[in-house]
Amino acid sequence: MFNTRTIYSAMVVSALCTPFIVFLFQGVSAQVMGSTNYRIESDSINVGGGYASSTNYQLESTAGEIATGESASSNYKLKAGYQQMHEVYLAMSPAADVTMSPNIGGITGGTANGSTTVAVTTDSAAGYTLTIFASGSPAMQSGVNTIADYTPSGAAPDYTFTTGATDSHFGYSPYGPDTVQRFLDDGASLCNTGSSNGTATCWDGLSTSDATIASAGSANHPNGATTTIYFRLGIGGSVGQPEGVYVATTTLTALAL
Image 1: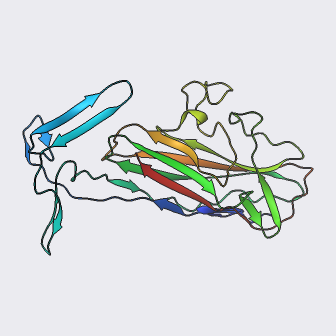
Image 2: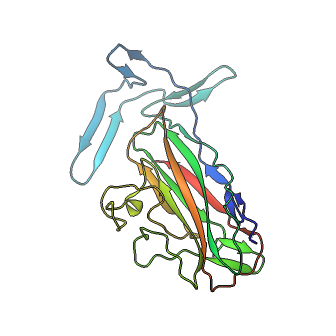
Image 3: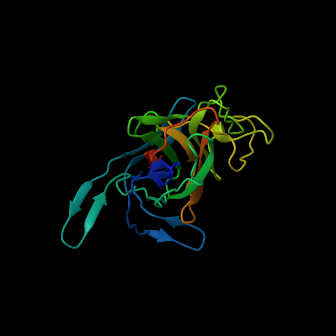
C-alpha cells in the first residue's frame, strides 16, 4: 500500500507536505488630512513636479524639497521626502499539510486526492502574484523511486486528469477568484481559454521553476483572496509502482506588485 501524507510543501503518496514562503511587508501609517469623502496619507511641499505620461512612459516627479531622508529615535521614525512613506502590506495564510487519500495499491493502482488553501491579502495598488514550485524533479519521491510529474497532452493544462494503464503521475490544479488564465477553461473541455474556473479542472505538473497560479491587478485588503490547490495522484493498473511513502515538497510564494 502507498502510505500517503502531505507535507505542505512536501507531498507524500500517502502524503504531501508543503512549506511556503511569504514576503511580508508591514507598516503603520497615519493620514495627514481627510474627510468623509477622501484621505491623503502623505503630502509633499515643493516648487515643481507632478505626474506625466505618454504611450511609452509614466513619470511621477518633484522638485525643490528640503530636509528629506530618514531619521529616527527611540520614540519615532521619520521618512521625509517624495514618496518616502510608501509601504506595501502583504500577508499570506499558512497552507495546511495535505494528506492524499486513499492509499493506493502498488499493483492494482488507483487515484488519490488532496487539497490545501492559501489566502493572500495586500494593499498594493498593483496587486500580487502567487507562485508554486517543487524542490525536486519529479516532485513525488520515495528514496530512489519516483512518480512522474503530470504531463498535459498539449501546451495547455488538461481539462480532465487522465491516467492510462501504464501511467504513474502526480499533478495539481488551482482554483479561486484570482486564478491565472492558464488554468481557466471554456466550461467544457479546453483550458487556457475562456473565463470559467471549474473546481478540480485544468491539471498540470509541478516543476522546479516558479509557476504562477494566481494573480490580481489591484489591492484586496482587508478581505484578501483564497486559492485552493487540488492535488491528484494516478497510478495505472499495469505500472507495478514500488510501494513506499512518497513525498513531494513544494513552495508557495506571494509577491506584491
